[in-house]
Amino acid sequence: MVRMAKHPPRKDSATDDVPAGNPAAGKRASRKAANATSRGQLATDSRIRSLTGHFLIAMPGMGDPNFARGITFICQHDEQGAMGLVVNRLSEFRLGDVLQQMQMPCERADVADTPVLTGGPVQPERGFVLHGFGEREWESSYRVNDMLIVTTSRDILAAMADGDGPHRALVTLGYAGWGAGQLEQELRENAWLTVRADERILFDTALDERWSAAMALVGINPANLANYSGRA
Image (cartoon, rainbow, N blue to C red; front, side, top):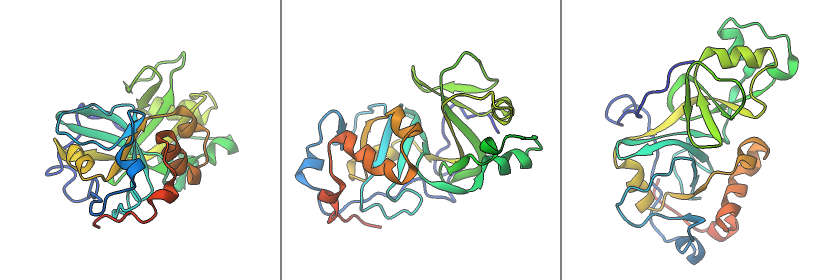
């Protein structure tokens, strides 16, 4: 586990060899998507509206396989860029594999079998634990909002291995990063829908149902966007 950078790297530095996102543009989506309300909307202006604590929901025309039918939870977003975790993409690893690699013993089969998600294409060797607030503090944590924290230190994994970790948590490898103005441009090109994140989707909803559930938060039936096509 590593310490989260204060600001996400620009695409022309740490992320230049992996795409942080691929805008889907072209035909307009359905009128309902285009007129999405404040519960979830397609950005139309250049002003920075922080999406920290929101979901980015990939439009059906998203051509980048890292984000197709994906939901990205935005941990940080300001004028210098954005950083988020994809929360519905299963990796090939289980938590037991990660703990073994870090030489941490784990006697609990249920913990060892916990799925690990692919958080994004940037630095896939880095681990992140997204979790709710609890009584315990961790060595290296970043407070996203009043409900959620991202922790990157070894102590939280050691606690999880012993069954003393956060009650509600998900583990990811890698993250998604956008340089200054990049996410705003993708939003103007209608690559994403946005909506305030819902903890039930993060921690309770099955992975293969999260994209549709997030769409439902916006009030959109994905079937109405089936014919939407953007550029790859």
